[in-house]
Image 1 (tube, rainbow, N blue to C red):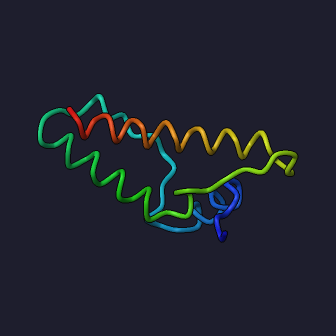
Image 2: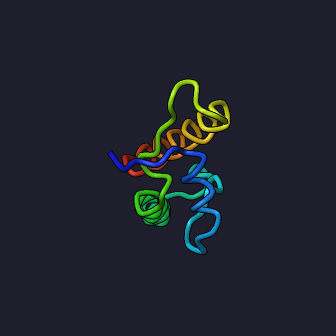
Image 3: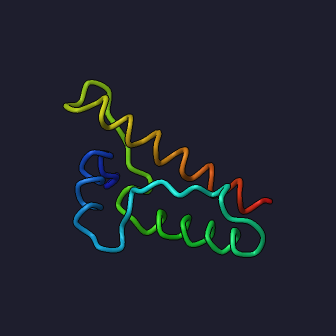
Length: 85
């Protein structure tokens, strides 16, 4: 499998102009705008190196990797939830 670890993926993402790890506050936007915003955020994340990254037990920087991983997971959940509204 060629999935990157989340620390490496995050480093790659920081070098790409279109790739962003910033949190989007999905609850701030409503209606049609919100759905568009959510779809864009979800699509952007799916195109980034961070999508589907992983962490290995006992790896160097494991805690940092897990922090990034769960941050991405929450971001995805937020985007999916706001698409259902």
